[in-house]
Length: 118
Image (cartoon, rainbow, N blue to C red; front, side):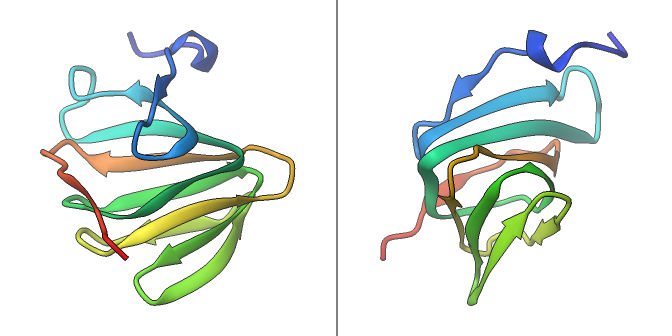
């Protein structure tokens, strides 16, 4: 289906994070090269430091979060574009009272996620 409503795409809990859900908006059955996902991290939630075997291209839709990518730490906010290279440790921690929401585009390849022990 070339067009669908975002509210009709099921939300999956991201068990590695806290207060985090993911929607696979476009998956490997629909597109051969890239997947598009939407992540929502509720206030007080986050994702621990972790690595992925695929790169991430992200567009922040709403809210604010402390984001760490490698040795860099910054506040990501609405309309920011974020690039995370494959294999680089990264984490998210929401700020404020709004959900932190972002689109995430990744290659349709096997993605192994590993939590980085601090």
